[in-house]
Image (cartoon, rainbow, N blue to C red; front, side, top):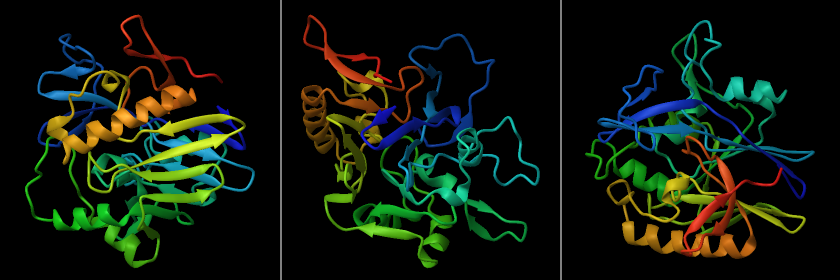
Length: 281
């Protein structure tokens, strides 16, 4: 999709199953037939879809997935990760300039590192500056050795310490951060204290990467994330504001965890409920 000077592509790591306690596994094709809206008994089925934003001069990744497969001595071609996703577009890991993290839950950032032959922690994207909100980092550190207070994925940031020590991470201090003209980072909080979304604008077009504020299309008219959010009231408040704004802007929404409708523009049905229309290519 072209939005002004930005070419925007959704990457895919595939489909996974997450338990309420936060364990994650790759979904199998022999799942039991009791699947309703992507769920299997005891597990929620999700997709992991990072965003690639390109200009003539810069390449930006939004959220980094799990990176499953990078630790293998011989990479499994059947396993998708940032490397295999970028190969599709003829981009090398060294070509990525920035990574924007919506938050630091494991399924959004684990793909940033891998273990080298000498068991050292190495960056998956060696030339990228990683953008994380300071409140998110501080909260993640405070949760070390603490029980996860919410359901779903938690924090496992051990590998990020190496990247922080080596100067790969830039900590955003404010609620608004302009990376470049037409590419903005907005702190929402709610799901986590330092949760961020991304706004892309250009040529009278607008798009939002929603992170886990709105993880999939089923969350447009309902709120079933309360047990997974640190501050549910903040989530509901900022989600309502974003949906109203996106509707009036005729903006495209990109979802990180959607199994089917990965993106689309908002409309309303006869009951004034939000519906998702196909995004214009």
